[in-house]
Length: 333
Image (cartoon, rainbow, N blue to C red; front, side):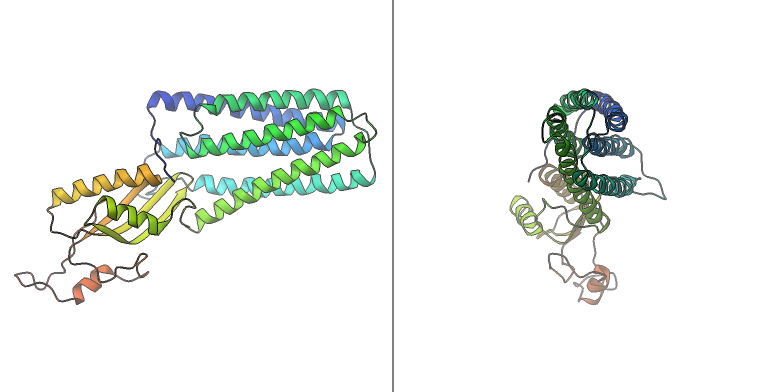
């Protein structure tokens, strides 16, 4: 899967930051309004949708925060910056969403057993306003949702919540019908199921990030093959790819050059490789180690904990005046 188009200029950054903040403010207002309206109208569907909107607030907050953190320079203590902070925030978000959804679901089941009327006017007014605000938030991010993986995630959250708000509007319209007293708790359960699905998906994504799993859209054998085809006779092995945070991908690999190259040529080759890796797989930071005589291990993943220096030191060095020196070229990052 390609990831071209990750870069954008400062004007675009400023415009997108403004739209993200506007969308965040809208969703905070929606969440507060739905909590108040849900309590006033006695509507579980509105309260459930408020929980759903809270997930939008968290998603937008992560998008804003990740963009700010991405601009902070690394420090000697945090050499990759603070990009994992948003992963921790996501786990807190998941925990709160699951807890709130469980409480609402329990009340909805009780309401199905003992139906209670809702205030249709308040419920309908708040639901319509929430639907309009969600659609407005989607429009704010529509032109930018492909430029940043976090923004795209927030856009999908908003789209899902617009559907949930529509379900609450329908429930409000049916409130005074014969089945009206059952529609509200049923709508609450349906929206809650959507919230739970989003929460579990977010939890799985954060766990994969903490476990430094290879991103889902990267197939390592295919990556090795395509790099080999593009930059033959060079080939890569001892490959590792993971994410520090959403959209922050790191790659390390050994590169068997397949020929003798001077330092300048190696830097040019690795520069082209990095452009290719970022354009095709969204790899933001690549560390490539050049090899001429090889490390003695051409496996795709290499052997964890096995020192390349040790392998090359124990191998028979070529003849010359440096027989006691390990023949290992430096890393190019």
